[in-house]
Image 1: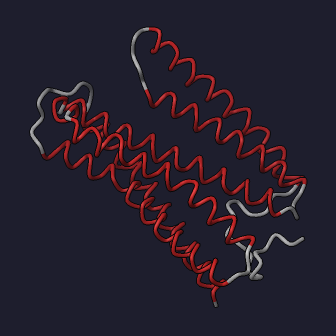
Image 2 (image 1 turned 135 degrees about the vertical axis):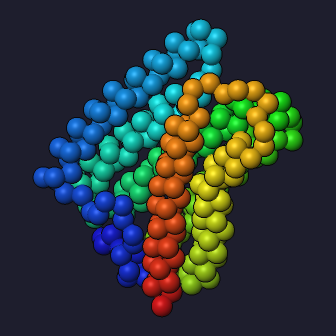
Image 3 (image 1 turned 60 degrees about the horizontal axis):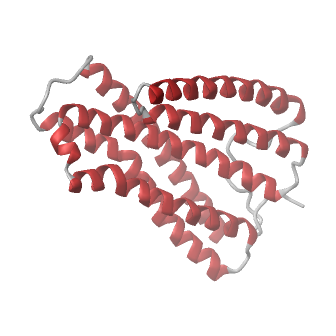
Length: 237
């Protein structure tokens, strides 16, 4: 069975189609590295938790590491079954899941910086819901929708279903782009409103890291959205 879509156009594949000679040994090394990184982050998280501190980024980094372990494990499986479309879909879905966790980690750092300088604003129910709850609820709702749309894009030849999934993907990608860009808005609120308290550490370094990460993630998201749009356009044609 071909790994191309039912419309005969090869789908956009992260990292290309894996091979036994190259991808299996490299993936095994990367899996070992991510296992070590994940264990380190979980150790840090548990030590902080026992000390009465809840450092959410450590838990998210552990989740990201485990997602990458699953991603490269599935890539090894895909290398041994290169003609199985279900394995290919699962491998690409796991890649996307890891990227979403990176978005969340970056946004958590941005909102923590806001809370450091504006603790009263940060704790207000309206701001807490709109900045710390609602965006993640939207992302959680979008993930199953994009997975279903991805599977249908690969599996179906019905033009009406493909048009519907195309619209759904455009809506979900728009939410993803807004979520990836949102740390810039959080930083703007943090820096433009006079601080209630003096922050700890070097503010410039924190802002620089968040700006650099947001720029890279948003640029990558825009590239993926453009590539996905061109891919779907080619399928329709």
